[in-house]
Picture 1 (tube, rainbow, N blue to C red):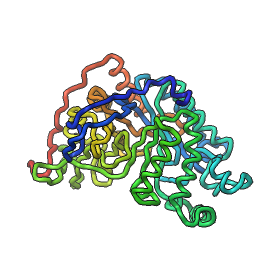
Picture 2 (tube, rainbow, N blue to C red; picture 1 turned 30 degrees about the vertical axis):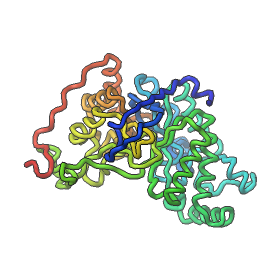
Picture 3 (cartoon, rainbow, N blue to C red; picture 1 turned 30 degrees about the horizontal axis):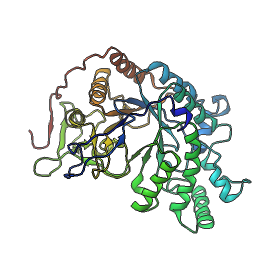
Length: 408
């Protein structure tokens, strides 16, 4: 057990039940699971990675953006004491090659210490890797659980041509073109360092694009658990959506009287769709499909489903906690996009989910100084204030003019 985790009591729940499994009927009893995020709400502090991090933290006077991510961490801690967890970054969002740490003992062992970095594009400077170390340490000292975003696709997918060539040459020269082994080895070196900082889990994005098959995905997750047996894993691998009694997808036709988007979209259902996850990735219906992050259908179906049961199971061998992860704005990361939640709707989401024993994370954005956007702060402070007094949430009412396909 790592020292940074000794401050946290891990809630281990043994449930002998078959009522909260996946759609299939499971006859065998559900085994032990650690529900460490049960009843927790959180936010995201998006710390950039790789060479991007150098640019973001460089002073404006020197041509950078002047982000102070440590100030952002302290703001979250001081402003929202009821928050139980935070998602921040091992890799840059949507970029598996851009890491927030630089030094990797596994790479040193393979290549030799001199010039061991695969490509400078992939890592921040030695001084700037301290940013994520300080951020994680700040959260852990405040007794917040820390989940790291880790993109699971090949580093060559989003790197520059030079960076991709460097990675491909590394895989060919040192791993006989076995990219799975190379990628797992690289990640293990960083995960060992994050484990020493007391990191609690990993939200693995783009796991369907992992450079390997399902057996190799299982090896990858087991590698993480070998480094840290207490770790929480969420794999963004596959999604489930609500269906009607005939097996057809329910779709939202209208979000209300002012809805000008004719796109009909499915409604996310938090079902365990893989054998690896301890919590569901919780990723909502993709925004590109026309689904707003604060859809009335999420309140009417997704949140209601969590209230029915806060756990799900892939095959009956363990329970997976239902966790909803959704942007607070109309996009996942842009602070310039429209704020979608007001305080009371956000509180309804949080209160109903956490009271049921589920977990919810808002994907928040950062201002030009690295702290949370002020309009988002207003919403989150309202949620925190209401939680502190255990206020009853307002009653959900379907918006005027909102309906499913086939209802009108």
